[in-house]
Amino acid sequence: MINKIHLKNFKSHEDTSLELSNINLLTGMNGLGKSSIIQALLLLRQSQAKGLLSKGLDLNGDLCSIGSVSDCLYQYATSDNIDIEISNDEATRSWSFKSELTNLSDTFIPLENGKAPQEIEQNDVIFGEDFQYISAFRNGPVNNYDKDTSSVELLNQISRKEGRCELVAHFFHYFKDNIVADDLKRSPTSDSSLAAQVEAWMREISPNINVHVQPNDTSFKINYSYNSGTGKFKTNVFKASNIGFGVSYALPIVIAALQACSTKPKTKKTTSKDRFIIVENPEAHIHPSGQSKLMELLCLAAKNGVQFLIETHSDHITNGLLVATKKGVIEPENSSVYYFDREENSHATKSYRLPVLHGGKIKGAPKGFFDQLDIDMTTLMGF
Image (cartoon, rainbow, N blue to C red; front, side, top):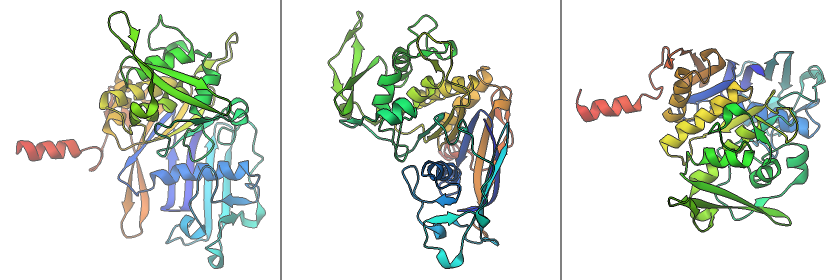
């Protein structure tokens, strides 16, 4: 598990440290540095995948593209170095990348003096197959989903490019017979297969939905039907494009969380150890009650050992964490809520960790932390 992320001179982060727990929420207004935390991890991963991290940081690739050195370096930096540090239970790895004022248009930043940190282990969560990225840019309903045997079946990835989850149908089809951990089963007596549990949780977002994955030669289709009537007869099968965006946006999150807490059939080996899942805007296109249930699922997965880094603008996602805390689904010490603000004079990100207390309360919430409802109600009620 990642315990700490430290950034210096990276975009708006003059000097930012985050202590991470099992489930971590990044909140705050737009343009204050939340996405930059995620981008720093993605840049490390894609540079390693290209075989370049031992030489420097590649700023553009399949996972993340931020432009050139001038886009990466904090505007008022007093040093030319961009530093990224990641700590886990076993080690702290630090990278210091040396920018040159004469090369600000470059798309690659070399390591200072060519010095790389200690050797990266194959099972390092940021660089291995135990990592998933589900971006705000993920696919809505599409006619065909990509097929990629090596990415899904060898590298365990739900996405290749920009966290779009274009491999979600192949991923679901390949892992559909996995056995989901009991703690994550929507009903204690229900079918334990990944396929059945995905449908069970998706019904919290779209009631009575059924998910149909159809493999073709070089692609997959996802269609949907609904149970109807007292006998639970199924409706006709509908194309994804006729169901709406919320179902397609929620599906990869549900699949990734359940797969991370599942076992292969006829084995006792769980897959949740050291899993790391980044989710941007899990609330997108989802009804508030569905957001709350989705957060319940993520908290259950976190309790089973999966680590989440979640960027959100939704009070329903945050409240979902607090409700899960009050119900004892997750302990306060296993969650972190960060509120991001900005120092106006230096345009530097400021981050505040807001303690989650027993009983599902946030201690010391600052102005701007999901208080718009209170502000609006004061205006409407006149007091």
